[in-house]
Amino acid sequence: MVAPTEIVVDTRRVTIVMPTYNRRENLRGCLEALLASDVEGMAVELRVVDDGSSDGTEQMVAELQAKKAERIRLHYYRQANSGASAARNRGIAEADTDVVLFIDDDCVPERGWIRALAAGPWEPGTGALAGRVISAEAHQLVGRYLAFIQYDEFPVAHRPTHDLDRIAILNTANCAYLRRVLEEAGGFETAFSGGGEDIDLAQRVLEKGYRIGYQPAAVVRHRHRESLRSMVRGFYVRGYRSWLRRVARGRIRRPTWGRLGGKVYSLAGRFLRLLLVPVEALRLRGEGAPARDTLAFAFLEWLRTCARMAGETCVTYRILTGRVRVPEVG
Image (cartoon, rainbow, N blue to C red; front, side, top):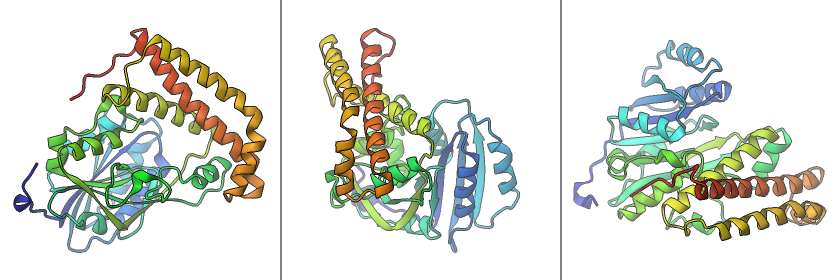
C-alpha cells in the first residue's frame, strides 16, 4: 500500500469515464448535465466508451462534441461489444489524471457533482470515494417499483454494508478512484460485467489495505429501467454474473450436482410462491407502498427474485457441464 506521506492528489485535473450501450437519449441527458457542471478552475476529460451501440449514439455524441465546452473536453471511443467492464478499462487506460470519476449513462449528476467528488476527502490511506445515488422521478410501474425498493441507491440505511465508516462496496453510478489504485488493483474484471464488477473491484482495493471514503455532496439521480423485459433481463444477468463472481473469488464453494439440485428445488419453490403474492402485497402496504401499486409491486418482487435465482441456477448448470469456465482470478 502507498505510504500516507507519499499521497499527493491533484484534484484540479480529473477524468470521467462512462461506458454506454444503446441508451442514446439517457446518455444525452447525462452528457448535457455533465457539460453544464460547475468546473471553474478545473480541467476535465470526459471519456465516453461506446460498447458497440447501434442506435445513433456516435452521431449524438458528435453533435455535443461540436459545442466544445471550454473546461470539459468530451472524448468518444468505440469498441466491439465486450461489456461495461471492458469499456471502463478502456477509459482508465486513456486517463492521465490522479483522480478518475465514474458515472453510468442512466444517471444525471447535480451541477456540483464533479467538483465535490474530485475534491475528496482524499485522506491518507483513502483509495476510492462513494458518492450519493438517489432515484430519479419515475412514471412507469417498473420504475416506481425500483425506486420504492431503493434499488442501487446509496446509502440505504437498512443495509449493513452501507455503514459509512466502513464502506465495503462501490457503485459505478457514482464513485471515484485514485488512478494509481485502479492500476494497482488491475481495473475491472471483465468476466463479471453486469454482476457486481464494481463491488468486486472495491473488495480488491480494500484487501490491499486502502479505505473507501464518502462524499455526500456528490449526488446523481439514477433513472431506473422502465420496461418489464429490461428489468427481468437485468436481474437475470446480475444473478448469473454475481454467482460466477462469488465462485471465482472463493466466496462460495464450487458447484456440485447436489447443489444444483438444491437450487432447482429452491427455484421451483419460488415459482410456487406466486400464490402468496396477495400476502406479500399486504406486507409491502405496511412498508409504505402506494395503494394503487401494492399488488403490482408484490408481483414484481416475486418476478425479480425468480429472475435472479434463475440466473444463479443457469450458471451453476453451465459450470458443471463445462459450458462456462470459472475465471482464474488473483
